[in-house]
Image 1 (cartoon, one colour):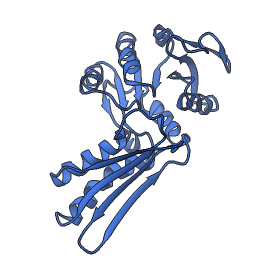
Image 2 (image 1 turned 180 degrees about the horizontal axis):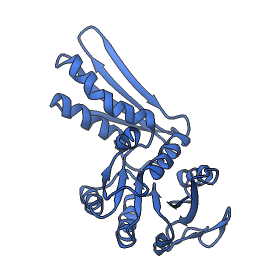
Image 3 (image 1 turned 60 degrees about the horizontal axis):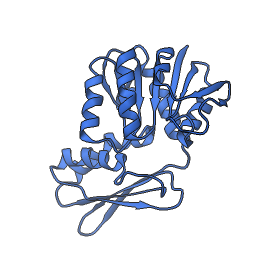
Length: 237
């Protein structure tokens, strides 16, 4: 059985990961990690107490981290210290923080993706092919919408979509962001020629699709050699 740690356990995403993991026979949750000052520190959440001590990582095999860049940066030090696997879904990381992720992936296995949805990761794979087949006569832009509390814009998913399309077309891809209400996640890629428009849209209806992808990645990364992996690797595996 794989022992799982969840960073940001009291957040909406962390709670859902915990709920789903608690019903998975292949997983045992061994650490619920939150930042210092969180009201639930020391309180029971299910059968575990919420902790603010990252040294608790020595108890687990894999940490799932959907937090904020500053928290993730701190967690990386403990991941390296205790040689634990990491599933990282935090977005908005700076270039320096991304470099730090790459550095620790030389000593531990890391699955790092801006979006853990299986559907979105299929799009990452096929969008470059669509762009190449349409050719230079088609312009492309990306529109993404998220809830008003999301701090980074454009989203990590939109940036990744733009990155894979740009690699195929050698052109920059404009991105547009909307922050309203409680939208889970909505990404639309618009290809436009002189007489037609093609829209490819992904809508998240629940946080469950991200949680399911993260848990799938946690099972896959367990006992893998050190390296930087993506959900694409998980799906291939």
